[in-house]
Image 1 (cartoon, rainbow, N blue to C red):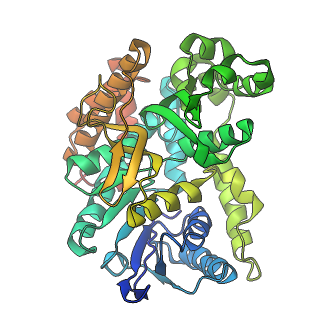
Image 2: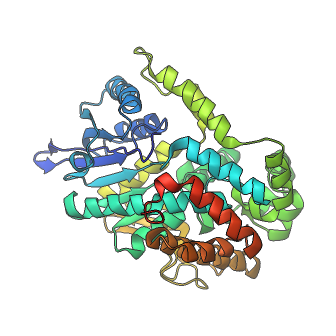
Length: 444
């Protein structure tokens, strides 16, 4: 995706004997993920009648390539709406019922720096976790809040601002703390749901998760299949031994048994910091892989005969991205009341976390938004880490908006993967200097 790229999907017009259609604005249309979104929207016309798909980005070349593929995919699916490209934020957001945001301020070059600079200071380099995620948040939060303000001013009455931009939980916290009508979404939970559905031989709608924590810091404490918890079977039954062996490639089986829960893959940064550092120092930089994959995807997208998403897109990550995105927006529009995992205010769902904290949990979705389902308190070994990470998120959001080095230093020290002042201070200087073009609040 281009720097600060934007994507907007919109629908206007007449639907079902006079009902106004839905305009969806997707910010970041130059993203190679966009075909996933297009597929999700054009196949859900029964619940989400989109007339016009407006694609917004600041990079006209990428927008043209991806937008043309989006048009071809829509036509192949028999979708009769309009696909339109624009470089104008106001044009895209004006009258939008949904604004979908998937931007990356600074592009993948900034991601590369997020993943490599921390290594020089003995810290994990990762795009959403640790000091890399901190740098990304400083670049991202002001841009996202600016888009949300524009949506409040120029979007349709009651427009929803739906964020897929990482670090999703932190960004959603900032959006809600600034009074915006927003939800955050990640594809980790839907990936688990689809995986478990396949393991148990059922359709995904029969699987509901007790998915708890913060974005990229979550555990599956229950796997309900038709209301019955099958997690003990996954942890103990002989028939799932192969699954446990495969899972152990990221999280050791002994640790899973100790927790009696399935941690998301991102927990390895906290539980296995030393091993991850060895891997990163060995040269495994994900940003390099992503840049190579994206270059290959854009070449494929240029093919005027291509009208389906290519197989290579699966290597980019983001499995079930279109399902999660389109399902959430369709449910918000249709008010179907189904259960999905989103980033939303806690409001008592996790009893031992503050109500105003944004958490990632199962929620019932209707036209009024996401209503988190009550769940059990977090066990102490989970609660401590979540509280630590939430404090860091709140401090980072404050620093991103204040542009204060002192605020930023306090936030970086609060990061569970940093902590040490003598590490945080020089690391912050390096991150700020590298990101100077994207941090006007720090460098007015």
